[in-house]
Image 1 (cartoon, rainbow, N blue to C red):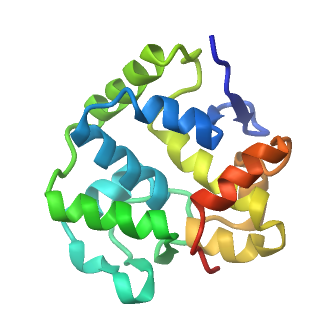
Image 2 (spheres, rainbow, N blue to C red; image 1 turned 120 degrees about the vertical axis):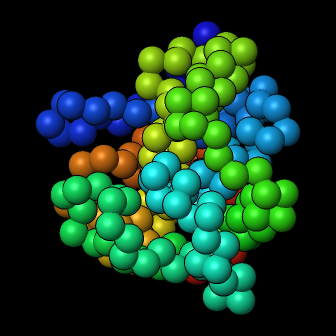
Length: 194
């Protein structure tokens, strides 16, 4: 059984898996084609699920020429305690491809629980310990990769993610990855210009 890394908030209230690129691929391989598109959209856009579900109805937020999604202030999305409600989500090459594929295929989102169930089921099929596997772990995973690969750009990352620096350090993993995993992360984040 594969036990992925995990990160627990300092309050101890939440814990999420942080996947390596190879672990991400193992889960992705077990998804059906529509869920693969949704998975990539969530992972590479690193939005909260409610933000992604809102953005799914607003393709105009995506600007390929800017390599970004411009997420405006929208009442009711994001976290209640979040101080950064409007932000620019800078995309990697994989991010641009994932967003384009999501909008071109018009797959939209099923109910939140369906997405959660699909990811957990895929992880089970790939022989993962599913204790901390969830839809939320996709955001945690890619932001942790960003922090590991771009350690000197935490303020830029925090603005893209919609957190302050203190929250970033509380909820994401920036160290402890193997050298081969970091090489894979660099490839996953290719083209990301913070």
